[in-house]
Image (cartoon, rainbow, N blue to C red; front, side, top):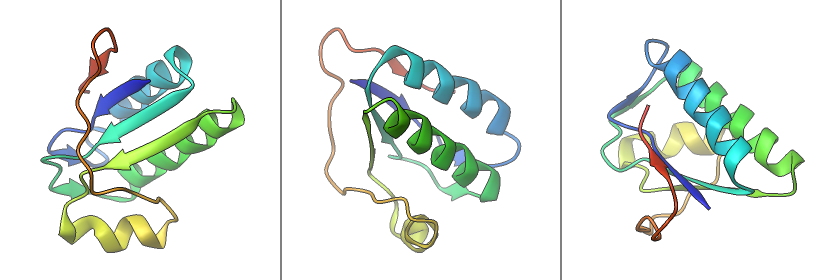
Length: 100
């Protein structure tokens, strides 16, 4: 499992770095967890990267988990079909954690 820390913002400004981190995550593990703890902004560009990551991971037979989504972002994530969980997961020993 790979844990990708989203950071405070997932917008068009951060999209190129987020896309690269998402590609690296998908290439390194079948199951990817995106931790949105502390994420305050997520626009269409950020959502598109997450949807692409979901498609990439599921296309390889894996699973994408999205956790710690702030209440103001719940509606956006639901509207685009990104399921999320409220639970917090730690980074397991030996699993990489990246923040774009």
